[in-house]
Amino acid sequence: MAPSIPPLRSAIDRTNSKPSPEREPLWRHVLGECLRGLRHERGEKLSETARRAGVSPQYLSEMERGVKEPSSEMIAAVAGALDVTLVDLTLAVAESLRSAQNSTSRGATCSAAYALAA
Image (tube, rainbow, N blue to C red):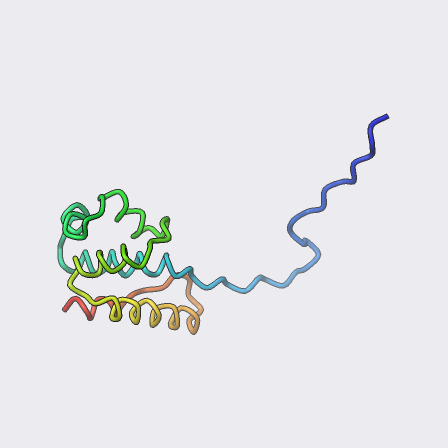
């Protein structure tokens, strides 16, 4: 005789009527938004920036979409291709994360990074 298998419990607690707090954006997503914003401010195509950074356009696209968790070397290469320092890019990402944390709206913007491109 087969052993009895207990019923699966729902992964979501449906008895809790409180709305869940918004999640803060992931660092890689905000980084990608900043990189894309900087590239657009320069009026560059993905392939142009990727070539100067020494990465494939596909990889840069994945970085910009927050799909990849890039190494510090890759981030530094792309930052250099966009003529920003790693420190300035990191500060812009941190500032965007801070503003997203203090804001009730969904999604972070990277206005600090846009200022770097000017």
